[in-house]
Length: 200
Image (tube, rainbow, N blue to C red; front, side, top):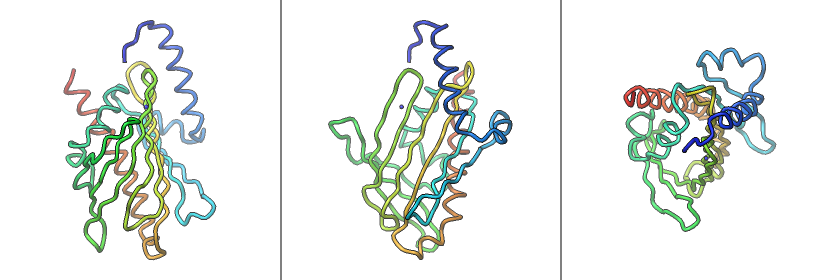
């Protein structure tokens, strides 16, 4: 979550998929989405001190470029703000991967956490979802990146994450976490567009 055999069918399928994701975006924000802005939805979750964030953005690159970029873990620190390292530490028999991310954080300077990534791909649709396995700062962090065709050659992505910190002290980083989520989506889109332009 590559080969297009029947072009008319692909167009029909892409249009229907696009409508599904776009319908999640408030109508008042759809013009901003079409213009290339990041649209953020914040949803309160019972029992969680932080809201679930869903960030939508149209990327001027194909779905294959965007999905390949997200799974290029070695290159991630070169374009992702605050990311020091992304390392696959286990490739599991069921196709999932355990990935250790080392990031810069305020006060304590750096920390590492491990997530299990699950991948799904159907045609040009790609989804990677993750669940937290280990972190000194969070007891839960679940999310996903959904990638779907948008028009003829662009991609609509949705990055969703819910983080539940270990202590109330860490909850003070809520605003910083929201800023970093926006920066991550922007960095992913910018790098995907750079790679798409380079390939032309």
